[in-house]
Image (cartoon, rainbow, N blue to C red; front, side, top):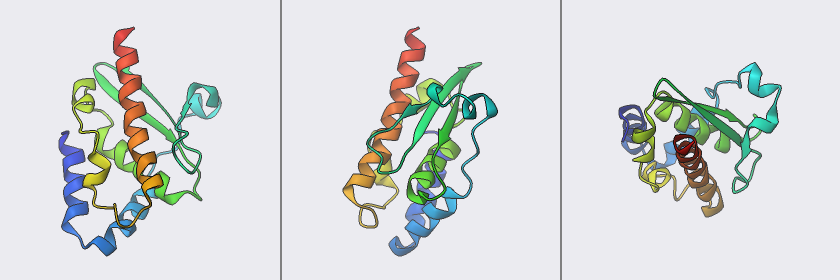
Length: 140
């Protein structure tokens, strides 16, 4: 597990269950805006249809490091929060590091009682899409 992501998971697990959703909402405020090259060309992003809110993502592998890009509306703080967790925890990591992240990583945040199973499925789908895009780019 990448060190930054492990630290985020530790932060979630270190606080009371009732405070974890608040921490996720804090992450939602720090999701970086899309660079102009993607903001002007939304067709370059993939929609994660499992998310209840419109969430789009893409990535680029540059010099052996994965650069992640997300688009989620401000009125979807849970979705934005998880996208921000993934961005902060995985951006700049190697493809191998990200591919090694356990698929159940969203559950490790300890939000299973605070969020519906449908929302958790969306979180898992984001991670799955990232891994799939990495595999596709490596194969090319």
